[in-house]
Length: 552
Image 1 (spheres, rainbow, N blue to C red):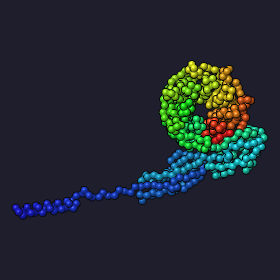
Image 2 (image 1 turned 180 degrees about the vertical axis):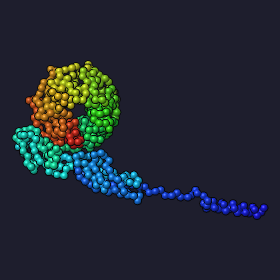
Image 3 (image 1 turned 60 degrees about the vertical axis):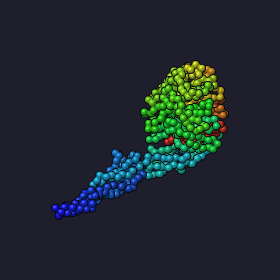
Image 4 (image 1 turned 135 degrees about the vertical axis):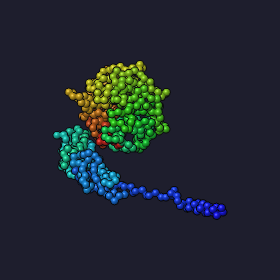
């Protein structure tokens, strides 16, 4: 019995020893290492090519002995690539394409980006003002084509002469002319510069630039002489898509610079900004979303906010009773603000109106207009009433009708109509109390098209009627009109890449050409400063504009 006990004890000690040393246990057996991951790297990673040009790509495969790949182009029509990695760009298309190398053994992929730029000619300067018979040398740069040569022409038959080296001689007659540079390789690729020939001494000079380019923004002159530029739109996704922004900037006319001025509580463009009697600025409505395309599912807003120049901050105030964009907001003599019309999210104009009371921070409805309107104007008359002109019940459907709002009754009364239906026009109170209506888009006789009009007319409040005035040299829409200390009205920009400007003289009821802006602008702002200069800001030209200019 003793021996058997010792044997059993020995076996127990041996078993415990083996277990303690890990013998007979699989708990600590190391798993086999994982197979190496397979990756494909394509070089060069990014390349810019002309149409029809070639580029050799190389694929480096790691993690496998089989380094063979199959080449392809991700986009249909984005060029071709052979089995050796030799890529050929499309001969008649431009864009951004992707070359893909796929590992034959693993299916792993790598890619490279190919940029085929749009062929274009860039001309400098893009706008110039000359005296009659003056001269200017132009230069041109060709992008996206192998041949960098251009030919020079003058668009107008009597628009002056230009040499093969780009030396231009202006005609004696004042007017707007265009120098055109045409690619020798592809004659469909052109660029034009606008020449303003004038005897006017008025001119634009550059001033500080915005922190951010913007269009359909607002600009409000503050009590201290600075200008609040708020909101607007940028093109965040492609050339046809607009998105509201929430940044704001202050222009200091003494320093000639812009500085950040707080952040709006909502992103917005095509909104309004109205200086209140207490020095604050009421910002209301507008389209908002940053991922909306213009006129396609845009979201109009009913929100409003106040900018306080003392704190430099925006804060929410009462909401409007309806969503509105491309509406109007007019400060009345009693301190309230009249808001009229505007577009909803579907692009339908409204006939409704409401009043904002700064004392209690709320909007209340008031009488409705006789006609639904968007992209119209509303102008405070010397008698305290408000003249509402043009616009239309929907985009591209302008009306010639007009009506007057009376704060005493809270109602609108139809007044005499314009001779021309228009939207996207301007309305300016002249020194004698009459209202100058200029430009806008109007129907073309015998067609369903709308084009910028050069026509102008004047509303006489005492007669309740419009009369035709002299016409501008060029048609304009979404331009600006600024009453100058001289009593003249500065009309600037408007239309496609329009850098020209004109002056309206109420004494002669005629327009005359003045100096041109540095760049073309549409949907910009213009504000008369306390020093008598007009500040022109932002807009849309060849892309969004961040620059600003002063007219004196």
